[in-house]
Structure formats: C-alpha cells, structure tokens
Length: 333
Image (cartoon, rainbow, N blue to C red; front, side, top):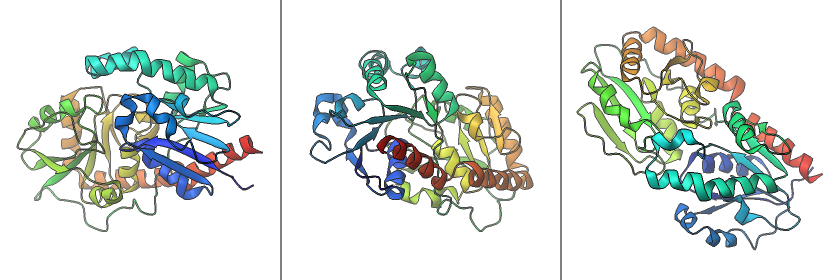
C-alpha cells in the first residue's frame, strides 16, 4: 500500500538522524523534519517542528516525542539508545546525569505511553525498555542497517609490519564513547601503531593529547566510507551502545573491530571471528588485542571478510527499510 505521509521530527548530529534519513530515502511518503539539537534545551520550541505538514503517522525517538504528538495521529517511537538508567551515572557529567534522570526520563515515559508501537535497535536496548518502562504493546527489535553498496572494503593490500598500522576511533569524544581510554591505550602500543580519531557528528568533548593519537577532525557522514577504507581496524571502547552504527559501517568496509564486551556490541561483533571483545575499560586488554591484530595481517583480512559477510546477512539498509515499511503499513491499513 502507499504509505501516505509519515513525518519524522529528528535532531541533527547523531546516528539516529542518519538512520532516519535512510528510511526517508527508502520509504515513499516518509519525510525527516530536522531541527538543531539546541532547541531541546527549551523543549516547548519543538511543538512547531513539522506541525504544519500533514501527517498520517509520526515516527521519532522517545526523548521528545511527546512534543510532536497530534490528535488522532499514531506515533511510533524508536529507541536508538537508552541512557535514563542509573548505569550512566559514572559516564556522564553531573548536569547531564540530572537531565537523564529527571526531564528526559519523564518525557521518555510519556512517549512510551502514547505510542502505538515501540521499537528498539537491538535486543539489549529492547530489554532495558521492557525492564524499566513496560510498554503495553511490547518492544519490536529492528536492527539498524548500513548502505553496504557504499560502505565497501577498499581495493588495497593490508598494511605490513614494515609500515604503519592505522587504528581508527570514530565517535563523539565523551566518556560514554570511551574516549577517556584512548590515551592510556595508545601509551601501551608499539611506536608503529597509531590511533587516528574522528571527532564524531558533534565535535566537542574531551581533549586528547598523545603523540600516537592523531586527530582527523570532524568528518561528514557522506565521507565516512572513504575514511574506513583507509584503516586497518576499528577501535570501539564504548560504554553504552544502543546499536553501534560505527561498528556496523566499519564491518561493512571489511575492518576487524576491537570493542567493549557490553551493551549491544556483542550482537554486532562476533568475538574471535570478526574481532575481539574486551572487558569494559580494560586498557591493557584493548592494547593487547590491537597489537595482536597488528602482527597478524592474515587475521585482519579474514576477520574483515567475515564482518563484511555478516553485514550482508544481517545489517543491510534494505532489510531495515523493509521491516519499518511493514510495520508502518500495518499501522496505516
């Protein structure tokens, strides 16, 4: 059936926005309504986002969905992450944690109550939502997808030990992304192994200063496939991931991943086959696994090929778009 008008009010500068743009590209009638994240400092200002565009269904994140609700228009909320539980206290500033536990928790709860359907981008995230918020309709898991026709392996030979081993970190330089461990990890690496870091979609956060930490600066998402292709592996020491879009994109580009064994990451990275999963914050283990991959080009190549095939099987944009299209069709029919 024709989808009619689906609007998606979304703040820019995050992975969820990238995903909803993919839905806009793949679903006729689906339109993203972007707004600057600063507007969320005064949530009532969001009441005007897309308000004068006709909508038969609204699809957004739960954070501020309550400000986009309209009479007699069904709302679908998708949890791309979950930060309102007490776990986040040690990985947030006092002010941000206060925001998580007060207004954001309130708005999220209200969004779940008014939603006709709730989805989450991983089993891990769905479990947290069920535990804390108990949506009456349950939680449907729809994994995020990547454009595996754009994110492809580079046609080049892997680096050898005679040259530099290039490790990529890509993400906002925050404690939640594990940026505080980059310098200690770099300190434990051999001189020929360098960590390059792109500062994510919101280029602010921790200051990093180490001779083996090399900044790439902010990189637009439409250039990221070229960045992945220039590296030997991805370092992903994140503390909490709703899905891990960066890891999936790197995997599609044929990179092995050294990541934290937490949250949704084991649903993406197959430990020992597509990379290595390390205990949370264990910089010695991260450095050891990076060094092991640096000394084994054949392992890097085999793990990269495994990851590429895993993305083709499980995490394509086509699969994701098809699942959302089916969900929206059911609600609109």
